[in-house]
Length: 298
Image 1 (cartoon, rainbow, N blue to C red):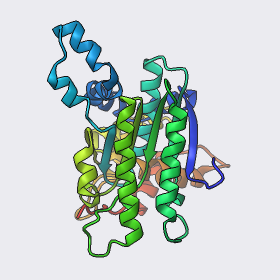
Image 2 (image 1 turned 180 degrees about the horizontal axis):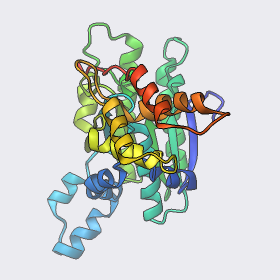
Image 3 (image 1 turned 180 degrees about the vertical axis):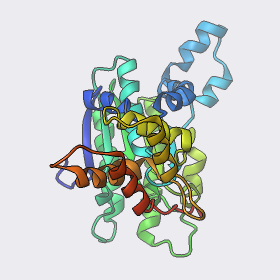
Image 4 (image 1 turned 45 degrees about the vertical axis):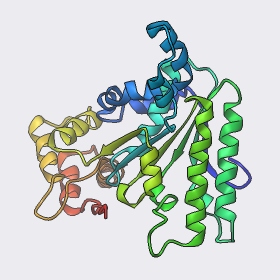
């Protein structure tokens, strides 16, 4: 972590813990396959010229146009749906599959907003992009993950938008623009709960925009069956938990995060340390707690 604490984490890739974590993200493989081709193109924009000559025997104007893509990926959707974890694991797999031995993953901290001093947020963002660029150097890869992107990149046209916020958005846009010179070796993943709040200029620059939603019944069943393996629950008991964590009236279904960070710990607390975890422990908690409220995208 830097002296100014602008990063929550700086991780050399490929990373074994991230490779292990990938296996716990339900639906990760399907989502990765869905956007893999676009990601592969985005990360290899610098090779389009050579591809054009080899496959079409000339420089296609199309390749010049595509090479102007901005290295920006936006993941958006409700809270607790795995956007940031997926971004980290995708960056790790890309580094692993490309056999990149010297890649770096940066996760920007919300402390980059600073303490409110004039010009501080823009300065810290500039510092963050500078460090990412330095890590990439002349041949390495770097990935920058910006979590809760709506707190840094809200539309400059909003009435309540403060001057400092507008400066931050301008700095963020300029930083993404400057990364194009790396031909895909540096990519930004911006995660947000509210896509509509993001500045229009950033939305236009995104090469990939992917939505994350709360898990449906089948996905929650797969998650519970995977996570509770070894507890000894029957299929019927798993289905009862699926129903208990599903939508009820005006109440939404549970998120992945709700299940893993609230349901499991609370249920374990009932059993630990005196007895084994039971279906009743899990069901009682599921029936007594409420899921996270939906983050309205307005």
